[in-house]
Image (cartoon, rainbow, N blue to C red; front, side, top):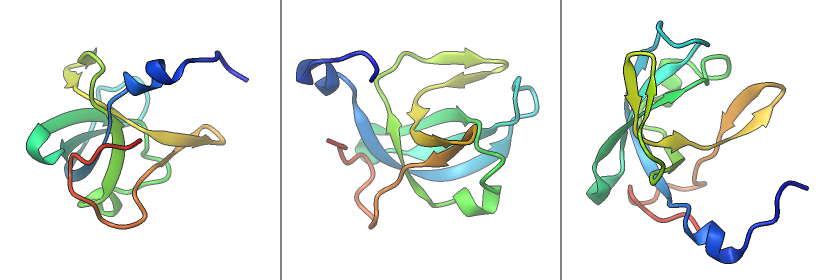
Length: 111
């Protein structure tokens, strides 16, 4: 088991549902990645870099809802500013995106 955290620690992580509205290749990334533009509804549009090119083609991602952490500080990745962290499960060094089973409003809190 990893480090034990308190429920209060967990409540500090702002997980939200967003819809991918644009995907671009990210050739300057150290490892193969996409640049995602994600709509979080009333919380606005944010960008993220995601190393998901092995399991996902760009056309599979457009309009797909995902889970992301939106309260991390921005992070510079090559020439791109990542504004949120898309959440996934690691399967044999690939990332499998987490997503709601049915469509929900963008910006919905994950708890």
